[in-house]
Length: 138
Ligand code: THU
Image (tube, rainbow, N blue to C red; front, top):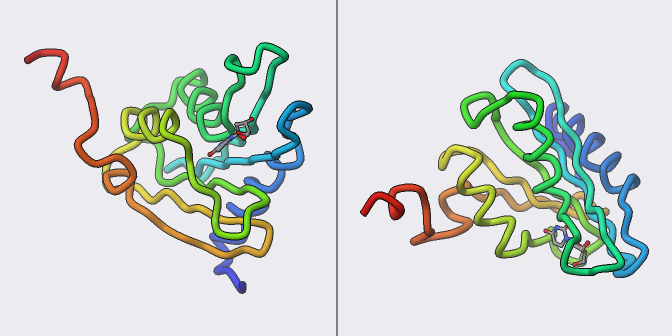
């Protein structure tokens, strides 16, 4: 699929994350890239572990890196996630929870694959009726 210039740039960063995947157990590479308001990109990849449950997904790696650098949800414009899937890759439940907390509800989550098929969802569409900080104060 032909992408706009902005999408193509984001795709290249997400694909860089995909290539960096450390996934010796599942052999399933995933990449992610965040576009910040200041124009910078932050790349993430999935990092697995012999203790499988300790593995970290690509989108969470990217978001944790953004927060580690001091950025917060108002600094983040969008995230793209890429996997070698027939349809645009679908983020797991844990990542939907983390994305819902660390990105604003109106931000785009762009799902793609190696064919550059694109599916765009808003953060708020990823996890309806989510558990969030408001619940902790009830
Ligand atoms: N994975 C991601 O990184 N993101 C997703 O959205 C789906 C799954 C990773 C976790 C694990 O390293 C591998 O893909 C197989 O589940």
